[in-house]
Amino acid sequence: MSNNLPKIVVVDDDEMMRSLLTTLLELENFQVKAFSPISITQLVQEISNFSPDIIVSDVYLEHINGIELLQQIKSSPAINSIKVIMTSGEDFSIQAIQSGASIFLLKPYMPNELIDSLKFLTSEIRDIDEKN
Image (tube, rainbow, N blue to C red; front, side, top):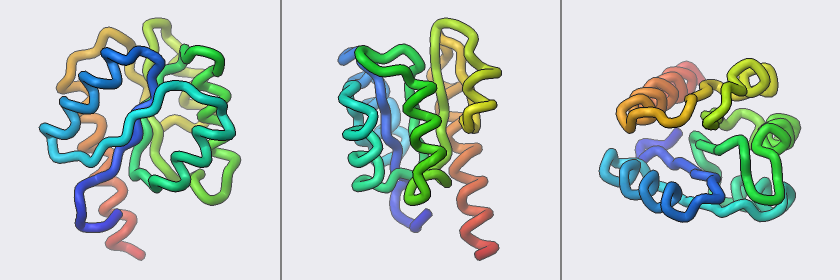
């Protein structure tokens, strides 16, 4: 991670949620790019182009499954080291973690839960960068 603002990708099919998360994260000094669900192939390409530090994705997405997106990210050498936070109104914690998510948040979660999770992951990324 560079010394610039940490880069976050938000993937959610709910336009209001994308907007709220973008605003919240920008207020917390994150650089944010939000995507509505497009094809998994397009999302993987967009994520690769943006090169985020962390991805926040819902499990239930229109037309695609967030767990399948996660598995595709983790099997793509160019982006498989990106930390992923999965979210859902149903408990997919075991499936998400087994598929490669760093953190699973059960909706509805408090904004500070997401911020704390992002800060934890960005500190982990900084620690790895400093060791390399």
